[in-house]
Image 1 (tube, one colour):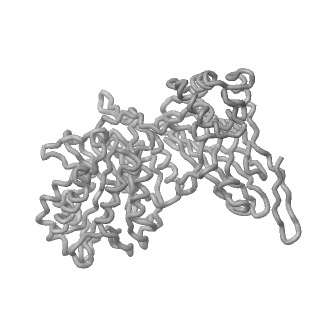
Image 2 (spheres, helix red, strand yellow):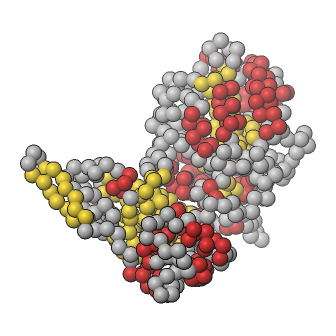
Image 3 (cartoon, rainbow, N blue to C red):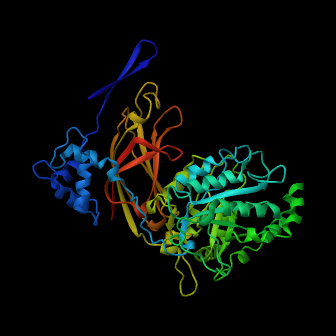
Length: 548
């Protein structure tokens, strides 16, 4: 047993006995079942992978590779694993709960997929005073974001194009720097297409400049639709391509006129310039965007054979879901719907993405520079499908009944329970390696507990928590929970670990969010992340997932 000492005042010390993680009884029992004479051979491990971990496609070569990757352990036997080595394997990166490979059908049209989407992707901080830069764009692309938003404005001399949040005090960045950063990083995390949504505030001559700049920088990477193109292509067909989505200039002028009372003098001066749009710029547009009309029902009309994208604010979505929920679902079966944060989120906070997802919205746009709970949920959704940034929508959102009816997931409590997820949380480790000794408490080790929440339709949403384990860096909770799920296809498991404190707010100690439909069953090592979604090097949980 290890001891740890904390100085209190000048001459007093507090002493704590630290319990090292022990091989759990469940693990010992499984090891005994799948070992011979205290040793788990390649054949034993192969059988374990198939029967306990339910990896039906596991091979003996895979089992051998696992054993080979553990040979660095000083107590490692040559012919297989003993119980301690098996325990370390279970806690290793070779045993994570999600597949790292793309495994969804990627040949359906784009509206059949949720897309990892950024909002004001160039901002480093808040929406009013934040600096514009290409750096957050690079970070987003490297994390798998597939939809990048750029607001295009003339520079002070009206001779070039800047990217900034118009009508605010945000500092600009040159458009060409953003475009080059996108080219250099677009496919670093995923080979599937990157969509650039332009919010265009440019006169004709600058539109032409943008068109020339985009074609020069992207070359063959740029997707330019054929004049008679009337349908969405698939992510597979658009691999390694960059797609421009914006309002055609004529429509942009009309939408500006509708909001005339909000236009400043500069924007009014620009209206005349929009009268003659740049043909070269119009030919860039791979996905035509539209502004929602005063008659929402008219905006949600279905147009066969037309490539369209509609945008709604989060508040407009809430209003539309009350009266036009079925029309939203039908619209998103054929066209793209983008949801964006309301303008009052000046601190770059986010909103609950679930309402957009249950209505089929493909582009639920988020501020990626934040660290809020909803961003953790967004990150969790796009850990699915190998983290490629495209997640195929479940069939329940794509079906249409004989009378043109669609499933109303806002009333999911009327559905039967489809699946029950059983979760056992054994223990956690790694905090003492990733955090300073006094990070949580200056006079003692942390008192850690875990919260497990189902995020999804309202009927499935619930939160459970473990007991706190006092004064231990490596807590052993050994608790089990069951969650009944009516729509498991859209459910996520959000796990948050906190340090319990009686005098102040409980302190964050790690989080992760996992798409339930993608969970690999069995005993798994679950890495945790910081508030911004960056993975800790050593902090992880040992958990077991079963569907009953």
